[in-house]
Length: 242
Image (cartoon, rainbow, N blue to C red; front, side, top):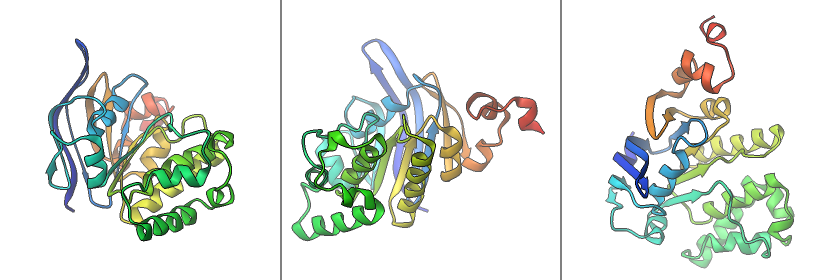
């Protein structure tokens, strides 16, 4: 499996406060990688820095390109896309117009194919295509945020807390879509507080605490680690051990 995204010795600071330090990770082609950890661990900060929203010290390479001097728009053109935690939709625009904004670099033919693909993944969006984004339910807004990112035909989709505030049945549907993206040839870097769901869908996982990775490996192995089970999966260590 070839490496799509490579982050080496990343440091990200807010003023004098170092929020991410000495972080390295990789995401391969057709791979789902998750980063789990508590609130404030630095997960969102790391995704923002990879996207170019925040300055990063270290090296980030994507699709063979060093991202150091590339603006956000150029990173998107390479095939890197981020769905932020707060979705950042245009509430006064309808679903279809929000989606079309995600395809601003695409030809008419590619845009049409994008709509077809997104509506296949999210039939609810097709039903709501003329509805204002601000009137959608939380789950529908998450679908729209993901759909808008997919309109740009990304090679790697970074998702920041896609299950936040959603009902369990909606969360299950979102994670089914995440698994399907891999089948469609899209890699995923997933930041998620619902560690159990994330570890079930991911190939590999990194555990982040206080700005650093303290553990990484196959998701199936991370899920059975006693400390991870006690801290993030809601199991007591004795239960995990048994």
